[in-house]
Image 1 (cartoon, rainbow, N blue to C red):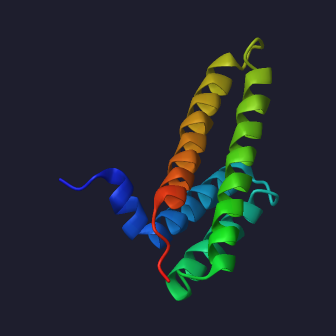
Image 2 (tube, rainbow, N blue to C red; image 1 turned 90 degrees about the vertical axis):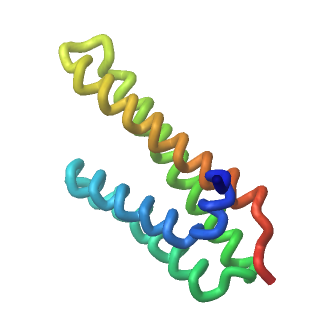
Amino acid sequence: MPDILGVIRSKAAYSYFLLAVIWAVVAVVDGSAFLGWPVLLFAVSGALLMARPGDRLTWAWTMSSLLFGFLLAAYQVYSAAVLLPTAFYSIAAISAAAFVLFGAAHVFVFYAGLTGEKQA
């Protein structure tokens, strides 16, 4: 059975496209144009990984877009945590838990990219 990091490394471009789709769903549900930026970043990252996987600029772009996505997910957790002591605690708890998992997905793909061998 192949390890999950190896699968993510071999299908890195598709994991970025998947993150772009998830951010697009979040942007549509939230109705925020600001959340369109991670969609653009992850779509470009996936395209760069398909076109030029061995380029230094590609890996710098992909790692920085993952960092941006993680920080944005962390901010979403913070903004949901502020609402926990209010009457909206059930919605805030679900939102915080979802973005914690989503942030963990960013960290996981980031780790897979750091430990993987870049194709030359």
